[in-house]
Length: 255
Image (cartoon, rainbow, N blue to C red; front, side):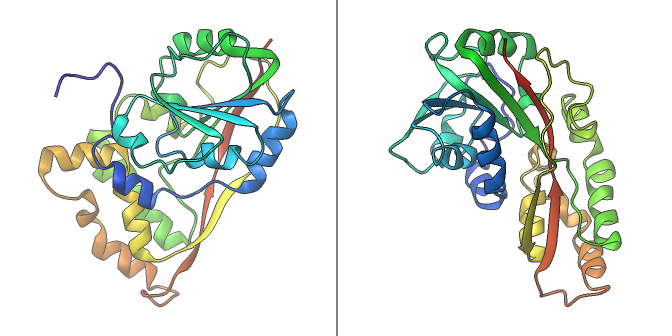
């Protein structure tokens, strides 16, 4: 396969990504729709398998969902109000001044920021909103479980993270964001997961894909026994547990 012209960390394993990545809270999309100057069209950049795009389609007449990975888009269910397009966020086929809301879920750190922000200015209608958010390579379950996940992310996977991971680790605070900020409420993904669902999520990390490519095995093998022991400290290892993934945001009004 020819070398791709974008940082492609998720085409391999796209099916697992679609299966194990959690959905965002519905209240988030309702809030973003409230902030937008209209409800005609939304652009979901780096849509992956279309998780955010499907939620946005509940609030907008039309959603343009773009991603440069054909493999990721192949996992996106069709929807009558979503137009999936295989293209980079930095060079979209959208018409000028055509969208009310631009969203980037768990992907802004992968983009060429100056080029993307130029594209945002080109396609945004007056007063349009750009909203980018993500979660870190960590979760909130219990002190014992959280500590194992932290060791996995920051020790086991340490040599395998791309340089862009620094923006995830710093919750996008150090990322240049040229639009006037809009404050937004705290949102988090809250769900009930089994330990196997947690392990499935951990295997979708970009660094886990790099580990697998180099070593021929799963990085989670290095923490599997430790995680199961931590899970069983105050719960049945076979029982689901409450999981919380805090989200962080950069939201702004496009001039």
